[in-house]
Amino acid sequence: MKVAIVGAGLGGLAAACHLAGNGHDVTVVERDPAPGGRAGRWESNGYSFDTGPTVFTMVEFLERTFNAAGASVEDHVTFDRLDPGYRACYADGSELFVRAGREAMTEEIRTVCGAHDAAAFGPFCDWLTELNRVEVPNFIDRNFNTPFDLASSPKAGIELLRLGGFGKLEAKVKTFFDDYRLHRLFSFQALYAGLSPFDALALYGVITYMDTVAGVWAPRGGIHAVATGLAEAAEKAGAQFHYGDPVIRIERRPGSGEVSGVRTAGGQRFEADVVVANPDVPAVYRELLSATPPWRARTGTYSPSCLLWLVGVKGDMPERAVHHNIHFSKEWTVSFDELLKKGTMMTDPSILVSAPSVTDPSCAPAGSNTLYVLEPVPNLDGKVDWSTERVPARDRLAARVAALGYPEVIECEQLIDPLDWDALGMERGTPFAMAHKFARTGPFRAPNIDRKIPGLVLVGSGTVPGVGVPMVLVSGRLAAERAEAMAGAGSRGKAGRSGSASR
Image 1: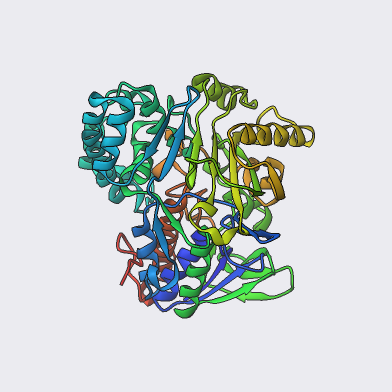
Image 2: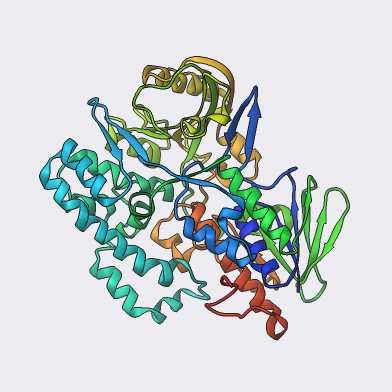
């Protein structure tokens, strides 16, 4: 089977590893000069920055992807377990460190929050682990043909109901802990899914599991090193890569409408039986197929966007700063109302300040540091005019970072706002795709195949299973499974639940 993969983002790369590893003829066509997509890299004045995701969890999902190509993680990427995974800072001046391991985290909670909440941490981890056990095989790591496929796992649905998965996340966290600081620390992950902790279903505690139980890791060279490693593994397995030439059209056979290949801006054509498309789902339809996106991809609520400030600074970090630092706002509830209901800037935003140079000094010159500063902001459906707000928003963010004690001598910087995300092809100017409201979760999310366009497979955060590096890696396996099913009896892989699983 000939497969053309449009885009060397993490989803496209994962699909390439599974398909090339199963012996298919795979060609990956990427518009940029290097792999990565959203997991890109920016270098300036001796500083190196990830330009996309910066928090890495669930290394086992990545291991399975490398295994599919006949490789292993350690062949291509070196990881350091972060301990602490996060430093959580609160408006009252207190701090909590997310320690690696239950015992260490229990003692941290005992010291900061007291014995009652410390005793609750073990049962909380047990609950998160049960959520993960139920959700991953039944609702995340599988393809759905229709929402009615949920009926094939009634026991899992009952278990999820028993675990309280259909209640609200923050309310569930409050049943374990009394301290408001823990409520925020163990529910802010809902924002990754485009939701507030007050509105997100408790089943999204599976994201908290990834951070809190599975742990946070730092790949040396940043998450972009994961992308380059996957590209190397796929290439060794037989995939061919063509960089620096964007695909401008997915071609289809007259009459049947089946895909037949892709054509690039440079005039190259790559024949294919199956096309796996990694761009945002609406962009695939509008720009590459000149077609209307399917209903589930054009309706629903898109996640908030973010203002991302990459800055190389001269000077030392605050004494207690770690790789990932979350600075929680005082006005927690009001901030979410402003962002998600009013579509305005948060007057008191919570921000993430990652400092990769704390773990890997090679990404900054001696005596300097790299800062990756992220502030949630409305997407382009909101009420912010980014043509006038960009500079004031940058200045406010810079002042906030300086007030928190981070170095102020700037040697290089880059700001990415929703208009920039939009220019990169990200729908509504958000890198976080469609929000995971229930109506766009699991089998209700935009599917990874379109029966009206035979041979087309979608991959990435806009389709199943959703947003986040672990989910996007899973989407690559699910896309490969779909592609092999299309190949029919001639495929070396197996259609169905096993798909192109690891060797």
